Image (cartoon, rainbow, N blue to C red; front, top):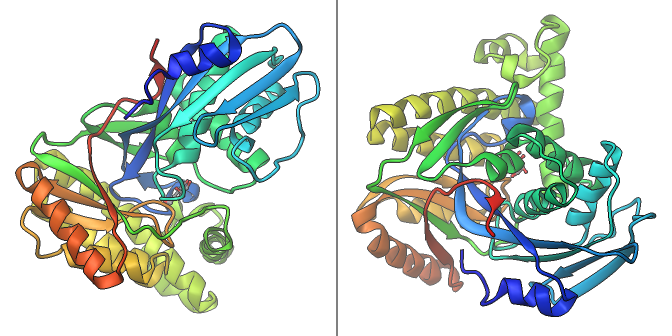
Length: 384
Ligand code: GLA
């Protein structure tokens, strides 16, 4: 994280008060895409791009929120917070306040400063970082604490119910519960997880296609609906199959012909992705990097061809990486339709890999991609 010089002094100068400061990271998903809302498995890591939230009490009945990124301040009445989103950055902190109020907390007057370096719209969960940082800050001011999984649920509710994006639990969960040098194998059914250590000689190289990604857009919704429709067909025959987590490839062989063609493809991705994610955790634990790379390649193929969640640029970013020295595995990460690829790369080759990938991509598309060598980081916590 590259904190702007004096985040503390920005808050102090603006609000004449000493802030408590909290940090919440963005994330990268190693494997397990569009499986979270099907109660399946994901394997994300928190990264060293994050949001900071500085908070201090006020006594004038106002809630004042300042974004250093947008250089904009917004005022609200603590007693009558907006009931609806307004399609701006402040929806995320307001969503958290609104769900906290819905969960029975009374929201006091407060000043909140926000700043982050998670690239926006790049599929690295800038919104989850903003929600989780806000939630921690406000909870500390009101003297309450939520355990990590409950904090993630609170923030997911803010995004689902206030912002209006129908995301799963993965992003908020890893932002709240990440661990340095580890990914998490998360079971999105019961939120139990296992730590998956990332070997010290493996770098997380995140390559931004510079194609904007948004989960508020129609494609995420459509794909989700298509995969849920496939599950509904299976549930007619096997009422126990409430989510695609409960379905098998065998179910698709039996009843796939009753599904719309797109639904069948989406379901094949989700069901096979759950199997790959479990297998990837085993490969990582054994240090079998060849198998991990193979699973990531298969996951990308499935995401791109069956789920149709990729784009020309992301497919190219993955294929341009294939013969570069040091590559273990590459795939599109996050909600899809743009954003970033995750490349697991031998640490000693990471810099040369990043430069070569950037120049190949620039030569292909005439766009300079941002490429970051990231580290798996701790989840949200108080900084100072
Ligand atoms: C977005 C959502 C997540 C998850 C991914 C796809 O990041 O916020 O809940 O569904 O897309 O795996």
